Image (cartoon, rainbow, N blue to C red; front, side):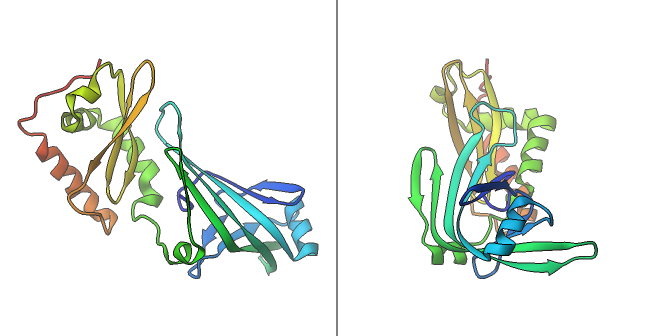
Length: 219
């Protein structure tokens, strides 16, 4: 979620800043944020040096579906700063030492231990997921239609639109939209991916499973 997010907000007492695209997770599990010179938060941290902080992350589906929020994450801890000289000016590097982390997906909230967070590694498709999903949605509707053959017929009743909404090492998730609501259905790969280069073969394996399946058209 942190690798791919387009929505990340850093809160310190009295200030909030939108910092998506300026953050990375370090090898020891700390969140690093590079703040530009001249912004209000940079001035604040330059004098404060250390403060309590909260980071809010929102995971949005990249394809045009209703209810685009797929999940939310909240990190809290201590934010410490150091100044880094650049060619033109000085930037401030802020590092969050994690105290608590919570992840909310599909209405369920899970606490994540800081040590488990530090040991976790990004999904191999995370950085490319948005581009891959949009490409599948825009340029390969026939592939999505074939994948629908793997979905039980009862789930396709009254479905008006199907769009890919998530792609990770475990499989592809299709969003089934009806007039009254949505349903997400996961089509799992035969084995979790370890590298993005394995994606094509896993999609082909799913498509081979559709041979002999009756076409299930969406209204």
